[in-house]
Length: 122
Image (cartoon, rainbow, N blue to C red):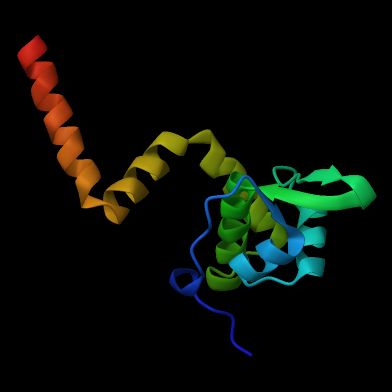
């Protein structure tokens, strides 16, 4: 069975918390793999409630998708993926702005409008 590529993953619903089963489906990763990744990646720390049930927040689902991409699509080892995530955390503005420009041309238009307004205000 082939793993779906990142672009084939389902959209993340607008909810505050996700169960491990939901995250498993959203990220195309089995639940036991998610539990293992919690031990390996310090950034991944879901809330545990009654009965030790895990509840993931939206940013953790995005992190899991990034981990999955590093491991399954880019071929990183666990330690390599851990280092890459730490490196990405050190320079977030560059990677976030680049990905935002790629994903949405509207952001570029808004940026141009804001820059024009700033010139007028100066």
